Length: 396
Ligand code: MTE
Image (tube, rainbow, N blue to C red):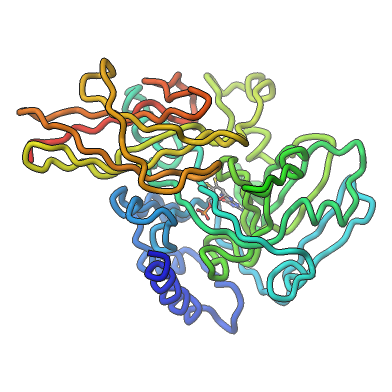
C-alpha cells in the first residue's frame, strides 16, 4: 500500500514540479488552481479561493491519504514564495529573536533534530452541508460534505526545539503563527494566522509532537497548495491552527489577535460582537465518524468509513458502532487500521439488509467512554458538526 501511494505521489510531484518555474514554489493564481484541480482527484467547492475535497469512497482507500485525495482549504490566494528569499522569524517573548532561512529548518541541511509523524488534518467546517440540511438553514462558508479531512505523514522539526533555542520568557502563554497569504476582509488585507497555547506547543509525547514546522508531506516536499515551503502542523487541533506558508512565529502572553483566531473558528449561537469576544476559540478536533461507502450486496449491507478521536492526548477510538433502528441497538464495526491519538481509524461493517431502503447511522466511542451525540446544537458558522452520520442505502 505504502509503495503504491508513494509512486502515485511521486508522479504527481514531478508533474507539479514541471509546472514550477526554476524550482521555486508555484506562483499559483486561480488559473494555477485549475491545474491543481486536474492533478488532484477532488471535487471543487470554490474556485477562488480554491477549496476542494475528495469523494468519500476515494478517501477510505488508504489509511494514509495520498496527495491526490488530500483536501485543500484556502482562505485566499497561494502566495508566490521563492525558496531562496524565504525567511521564518521568531519574535515576541523570547530571549533571542531570530530569522531562519529555509535550509536551516528543512532536511537535509537543518541542524535541528528532524522527525516524521502521522496526524489527521481536518477542517472544523467538515460536514457543514449536512449540518445545514439537518437544521434546514443556510450556513455561510464552504459547503463541505465529509471529505475535508485527510491523514498524512508530516516531516519537519519540532516547534518546541525552535522555541527552546530562542529561550521562551516566563510570562509567555501562547504561540502565534502568521502565513504569507493576504486575506481580503472588507477592503483591508491581513495574512491568515492564529495561535496555540504554549503548553500544547511544548507538549511533545513519545507518540506525537505538540507541533511541527513541516517541510514534507507523505515523503515528498510540500506542494504549494499545502503550504510550501514550510507550514505548521498541530496534531489534534483543527486544521485552521496548522498555518500554511508560515513566515512568523510570535510568542506572547495573549492569544493571537488575527481574525482567524479572535473572531472566526468559534462556536457562536448568534455571532454578535459581544458573543465573539466572550467565546473561546476552537482548538481540538471533535470525536467524529462518517460512513464513506454504503453498499447493498444481496441480503447484506457492506459499509466502510472513518472515525476520528477527539484531539486530546490519551484519547483514541475504542469502537465504531452502527444502527439501523435509530439508535435502539448498535452493532460494532471492525477497525481495519492502526489506532492512535490524533489520527483517524478506518473501519468496515457487514450488516443484514432489510427488504426496503434502510437508513444506517454511525457513531464512534472513545477510550474514555465518550461518544458522538445524535444531533449537535446550532452554531452560526457550522463548525465541529459531529452528529451521528446517516445514509439511506437503496435496495441493491
Ligand atoms: N494557512 C494559511 N496560511 N491560509 C489558509 O487559508 N487554511 C487553514 C489551514 N492553514 C489556511 C491555512 C485551514 S482552515 C485548514 S483546514 C488547513 O490549512 C487545510 O490545509 P490543506 O489545505 O493543506 O488541506
